[in-house]
Length: 216
Image 1 (cartoon, rainbow, N blue to C red):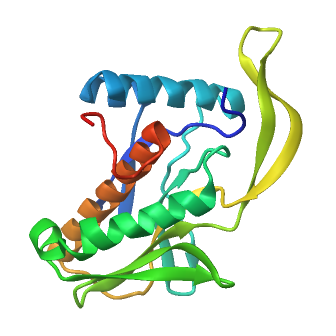
Image 2 (cartoon, rainbow, N blue to C red):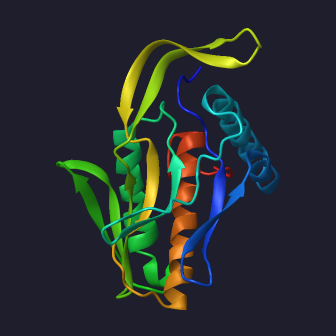
């Protein structure tokens, strides 16, 4: 059984009347109802993993922090068992195809995708949304713990056991990298971008590939 790390609850993101991005939670049950059997199975895995670390905690949420001109719009906890290097490499390749090559058709803007590095390590990608703004999608620098295995606790629930490995990159974040004013069309494109990124994340969680989905 996969060890360590919690699954995550999804959220839809949007802009408030003040232009801020807000998050509205969706539970694993909601995801199961929306999808077919594959979605239900993925939701069940998320719910099970969530009980290991944080029962009932919302793992993707609005982050109200700014660092200089960078604003975190939304973020999702990456379960510890997910291999960071493979996930981020796949996410970048997916972004080049699904966002960069299909930008005008899918989002209404030319979308320029570039790799995002931190200390010569690939940590995600940047997306220039026309001339409106630049969005960063990447892992943070927080540390999460990966346990050797999962055991059954006295109450019957799974609990992490064994050796503990520290993993860098606790959350996948979507960040606005400047303080540019964004038009309504630009805001809609960013909403769609966030939704597509999180769907790719869900696919990797459930199937081990950002290019897979319930129908494949």
